[in-house]
Image (tube, rainbow, N blue to C red):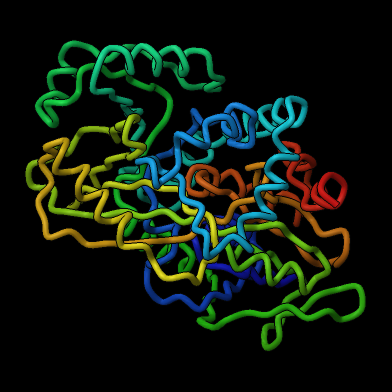
Length: 408
């Protein structure tokens, strides 16, 4: 049984490797030859603490103060209203207390399996040093904001992650990075990928060793009776794991999917003066996360809802550079700039499952901010489903037909 995985990002590669390791012939179909996709430009943070979906009444109430025009991280570009207005309506419908509670429970189960799955993945690709389990920090510039932030985090469901006040030594290290840090908390149980480029290379080598073929071309799906095919690729089973491109592919299979591009931005500078052993630091009042990789420090932020193909907004990069200057962070320019599209669904849960409209179609996409975090556990779930085994985590809450039932 040959399996075609459409999409070569972190989700697609994790699915392909899980399938290949159980003996299946696998081909990845993906046109990208570089590392420009969101899989390789994200914050590197394994966010096992983010159990509460962003589809919530609390998030909706916070929208006005989060807007980019008022200094926040959320941008709803007027020129792209045709993309985000329908999404906003579905997000509102997904944010009722009952649906939020169900989403939190489902996401909590996925995130509970995320770190063990990551340990298995880095062992399988012989790259254990890529996984760092030192947690992360959240920092604030003054006591009132720290008190409010602490209270909010202690009241939140953070799953398997523990929260403590930063120690005196940790505060000294953070204050040395930025004099504006007045208080911070330390998360234990979250993690980081130490080098995204190294992860991409290690996965590619492991896939080649496992006999996985990568076809560098754009894929389409066509129906053939009760099945779907990728023209030019012989496969018995097909997995759609194409990130933001999954919307068009799934539509061809008869599944309308309310997927939107949630675009993020980052800048990278030299890491000469940034401690190599420091976990990611979130400056919560500025809605940015700063991560040290092998040879660079990255500052990432923003939630820009719209079209994946819209031109980047240079104001986002300029604001990130201003944050670096105002925080006096020891990150040297010139900065490289990146923008990428997270694939996001209105209830902020991923789509993982088997199609009810095409007998040979499976899917794994829509992981929003948690694609890196959930890639290995998603790959294991899809491999189990294709093999006819019952996944250890129930995929039912992530079935794509939930949108037909709830948002039709």
